[in-house]
Amino acid sequence: MHQSLWVEMLARIQFAFIAGFHILWPPVTIGLSVALFVLEALWLKTGKVFYYRQVRFWSRLFLLNFAVGVVSGIPMEFAFGDNWAPLSRFGGGFLGNLLGFEAVLAFMLEAAFLGLMVFGWGVVGRRMHLLATGMVMFGSILSAFWIMAANSWMQTPAGVRLLHHHLIITSYFKAIFNPDLPYGFFHMVIACLIMGATVLGGISAWYVRNRRFTDFFLPSLKYAAVALAILGPLQIFVGDSAGLHLADTQPAKLAAMEGRWRTNPPGRVASWVALCWPDPARQDNAWSLKIPRIGGLIITHHYRGGIKGLQAFPRRDQPPVLIPFYAFRAMVVCGFFLAATALWTLVVWYRSGLTLAQAPLSRHLLAAWYGMPLAAYLAIECGWFTREVGRQPWVIYGLLRTSQAVSHLPSIALVWSLTGFFVFYATIGSAALVFARRIILSGPDLESPIPDHTDAPILVARRR
Picture 1: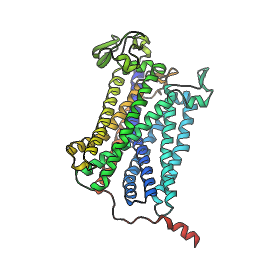
Picture 2: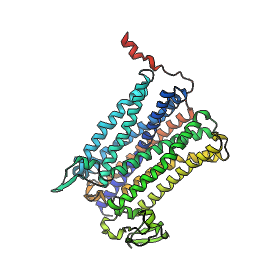
Picture 3: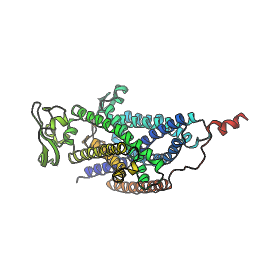
Picture 4: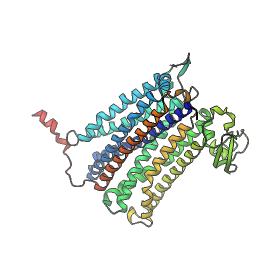
């Protein structure tokens, strides 16, 4: 392999590894922050101690996840300047602003109220504490907005023009609210909510199946099932809309996701490729398993819809096919598994009179919930790989190629830094699992007194 290609590949592998590890944590942070806000609001409204205990238990896992997410995300900032310096010079005038907005307007907001959320029990009133929890939730979602705005702009750049090989921003509004943002942002936020629900449900199912704190965790399992029953169809709708949108904005990515090399003209019935092994040298699939006559319905929602194939694009502009094709299908399979398990849970719940732990087949159902967080994690990772690999060979679609965006670094430096990142992330990942295991095994605290928010010590001291 040519030295420049080897450096580019190492840089891509390193960033994919960093991003792939980091993306495991923010979705849980967003999902659990929403759950904590809802539970605390229910406590404030009903006064039931049960909701307070729920908030205190799940907030311990939230804080652990938040900490690892922050630490794992720091190297990504340095990677832009070190490994992708040409990208930073070319698009930094806009991307740097958005990342700055994320740090100042979102992360700082989240971090500022996090201290009040953690240490404010008994210090501030209940409404103020709920406000702090809500601001942490809002900050986490706002952070996702700015990150997805930056990534969506790289997918569908808008509001810019090239002048003497320099990128000029002509409209910040059009650049931020680019064509991909509504689909990318809402698809990601719903995925985060699903991720939080699966973590809630998976851990609760473990407790219920092991007959530990059943009265405490059975309701949270039911909440997770209801949430997934609502979020699942909504995610299918948003994801399907995003796929239809790709036909206009990134047709090459859509062709790669569907393993389609030849263009199907409008008015002709197309088959759907379920499985295949792509052969870019032949510009065709070495083999494929096709389901006849449904390709148009699935891809375009029209029985005789036109579908653009990869052969319609120059070879140098064609994305890889193998990864987007199978990553997309793995994401869909995981999504159906999540939806099916949630539906199964609701059916058993309905038939058993709200006593899931004693229902027929409940132990098998609870065991299926163990795999729910893993399936949600896999769906997010596969969706991200589909999104990013399908964009290739562009780092900013249609404006800057990945080969032009990589820094000219010695390959040995990338090898050593990749090794260092692997050790670093393995360490913090293992530590996170150890601490999470301790939190789960210790269970919820059902004995400590509830702090008196109505007589805050700080306020009393000031009055005196």
